[in-house]
Image 1 (tube, rainbow, N blue to C red):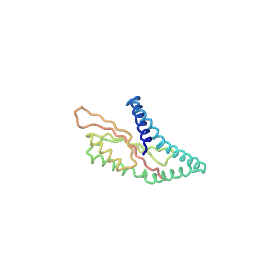
Image 2 (image 1 turned 90 degrees about the vertical axis):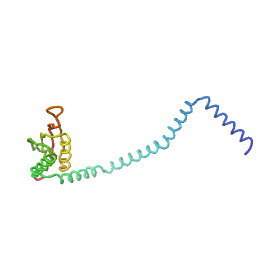
Image 3 (image 1 turned 135 degrees about the vertical axis):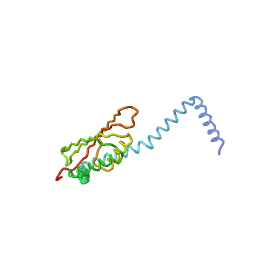
Length: 187
């Protein structure tokens, strides 16, 4: 190494040190942050912008080829597969028996139930609306709802309301509303 390059290196180091002393710690931190932001932009954001542009181009090409109907067809096939798993309306009594057995298994007292069957518009489904007033402990009610929904996949929880006679009473009254979806006759 020559003496000239050593002197230039020492002069550069001295100039950098003086510059750092002049701008202070905050200035150095600001420069480091700006450098990190620039590096992040170049290394992360630019490639993502290119990927987004490529994906938009693919969507534009797919839309031009009419790819949307295949998505609609696959969606219709998925709905048909779902409808095939829905029990028929003639199974409502056996399904209600399973629902009541789930309540009894959790130790709940079923006083009565209100049931209403209604057609679901524009689908091959019927809505069997079930309202069950039960009496028991909170954990029993939660376990019943969980067990019922696992046992009956087309059962949906519509709502639950709780009330107690006295604040220290471990037993509570719950009003549970379910909707059981069934397939219409001939659907």
